[in-house]
Amino acid sequence: MSSCNNSIPRPLVFVLAGIPGLESFHVWFSVPFFLVFVIAIIANVTILSIIRMEKSLHEPMFLLLAMLSVVDLCLVSVTVPRILGIFWMNAKAISFDACLTQMFFIPSFYVMESGILLAMAFDRFVAIWQPLRYTSILAHSMLVKMALAILGRAVAVLTPAPILVRRLESFQTHIISYSYCAYMAVVLIACGDISDHIVYGLMVIVASVGFDLFFIILSYGLILHAVFRIPSWDARAKALSTCSSHLCIIGLFYSPVVFSVLAQILGYHLAPHFQIIFDNLYFLVPPMVNPLIYGARTKQMRERVLRILHCQRD
Image (cartoon, rainbow, N blue to C red):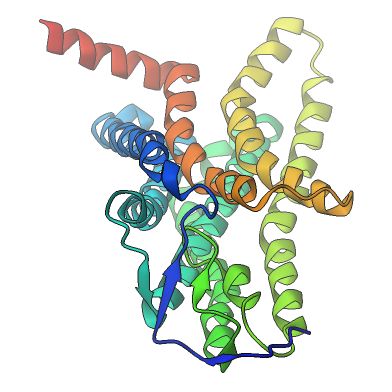
């Protein structure tokens, strides 16, 4: 229950604080944010271009990687420009409707990315458990169905967020202590009973990230079971190497969420500005690092990039 002595009616415009307590350092924070944005755009566009041009890469694993790159591009495009506007031009005002739009799309792309990582785990599971039926199981029609399921889940899970916030009638303040319109950041400045909103927020985490992480762990448990039944150590190493890039991305993507949940369970609370910086890592680091990991650790991608660079030198 959030009670207010001096409540205000639902404002037409909210004010995004950026990183509260560190406003004087906003210009300095903009430098790594901008560099991450540029690297993420270039790296993901490069991945998409290579997959499009190289017909040998038109197989399930790389088509799923292309989906991941598209979502990463969308994720940084809807977050970083707005944050840079706050840091560079002090453009903190955001209309109520724009706030609701941001509240829907930012977590939607995050949930989509989680779903794609689950699909990639299923891809590796099929490749190791059913190698002879790999292309028939993961045909293009199956990939389309998986993409539609990932999109449909994100829309179904996140559509209630702006609807629930629109029902809030009064607020403690019009200032959101965040760098974007996060659902819980808006709910926590509302007046009245917000217990339903908290339950909904927990349900979103369980129905998306929690669900995906459980089945990813299950998939890799079965993969390891299959790999260690292979008598040859060289064959085991080769099988595991096909999963290495995906495992790196999974660790990078889910570790901030797991850390935050464990910190809350153990009663450890970060300072507000550190929490906001840490939360921004959810949306900034994976889109930059994902294509770099696949580009460096996947032979086909690495060879194609080196071929392009060699042609440019000539």
